[in-house]
Length: 390
Image 1 (tube, rainbow, N blue to C red):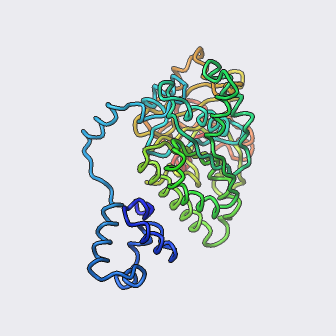
Image 2: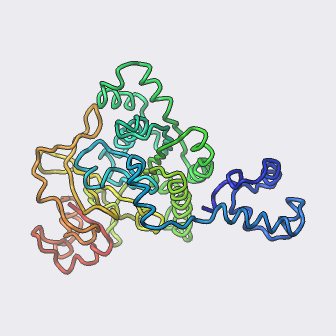
Image 3: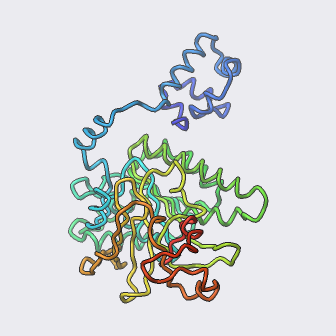
């Protein structure tokens, strides 16, 4: 809440402009100054500065609300509580879809469709509320130059052909998706800090960052002293700002993350992981109260891919088969998924299963868990690291 712009703290425009000339633009900037500094910057008396401090403090302080008030607000306007994924089984498990007011993390090895999912969600957010959308704009921060406008139009036209039945509607939809290509950690953080006013002016209903890991891994080598701390600070600052935006404007924020596994001191291995738990995962921090979804390529069942609800405050640990088609993600409802759904919300509680041949060649037999349902005791160190291999 301290990231709130002073312009929204009901201060006069003249005062905001004066403070802006001194690089004081947020409530945090204002509240971190001493009374003497504020008197110099604002040119006001001691008493008036104290009144300004109270006003700014009240503007950025979290508002108290009861559980009953939260429940009533969602019951009155249930469409504002979730953004539907249009995947019926997944929406049912998530109690409606991607939650508004919190962060959702999409995690997988490369090539599983994270960007495809984000593009599909961009289309869905622009739809009218009567169709399960949010009737708003989308801010899409692309750190890998992977976004495709052609794919956006293709998904829209094939997923909702009756609605996008004219070039005018497709044009209107594409004009509602604002793309920013940010290729460094500094530019990503700067962009996030500038989003508050854009959310208001452009009526933004969804924020997507694809992906978090891309810029972080390029700039921070954890082998160098101090880099791990700097990287953690960057992730914490970014997550905190995004959490504020999500809660303040009651909109969903979707982040994608890649998985690369490093076991003990061995080499990095790209594996078929099922858990979004990772050294770059935001879901492990207190700033990430929303769900985390893991995408996975399967070697069995004809190479089907799986989407897993790996962590959620409301949903059990669940799995769904999916394919990626012209219309985006499509769940394979005909497949038997009864043996792929577990109770519980933490993937760390599930048995570890190894199927990756490269992993078996690199590790001694004693270090690998058996393929039966029983998890051996010597895999406990892997469980603590939340590296679930399937």
